[in-house]
Image 1 (tube, one colour):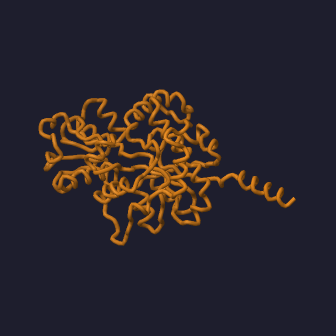
Image 2 (image 1 turned 45 degrees about the vertical axis):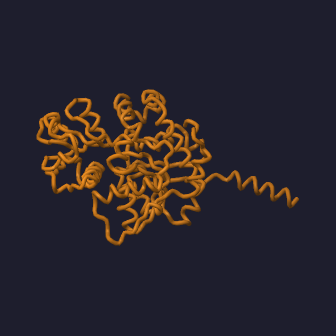
Length: 338
């Protein structure tokens, strides 16, 4: 009888579902970096992995981070910059669960009227160059690019007029060059009013110009061991589900993805297909953020922003928990589709 009772207890314990997760997402499904989490819910992948997810759409990446910091969410899908400056720098250590991207959705473009004068990064010296805004990924990327070529933003005439004005400035030549982010990047290239000099959406260009991958968008959880231990099963299931979606997105033609997703995630099929086509090489299929990659990413963030002198943060401090590494390993090199 005791043996039977123990066996039944073991079975009941094994069948205990993980606790539900509250997930705050800092971007819309039409942004390929944030799409995997939206898709994992809509396609039932979270449910298939055995975890119940309540997904809330935050207005901004900073708001998603705020929900995690304030205890209103268990997971935040936000930017690495927010994970550092919005969490670690404010006394809330966090760990990465997944990297959604390994390259930023940005590129350095040159105005067609300046094409013969600007062939190298050094040729930007003294030129009027645009960025989307201070503290944006485009700003960080430009600062890191200049630093890699022993230049500083002070050597340029730097302006930040916003996406539409960047397009106009490149078209009429009032901007010699600009670092432009999606979705404006795709629109400018389609219109032929900007020429690529460095396409950071491609991992090889990011490694070449910035020294390594850049994990722009990430899923994070609070780093306290008690919180991680309590949510371990749920966070592992979350990671498995999102990895399955990211591997599928990276391997599947964009048109097929658009046809598979529920209508609620496809505001415009044409725009989604175009953005997925442009972003496929920037996605992180296995979701892994390596120590070397995190070191490169932190260098990019430091180049474009000032950090508190008291902030001591090593790449290893951000590295995924061991149970996420184990979850990825169990999926293997070819995760099942969502």
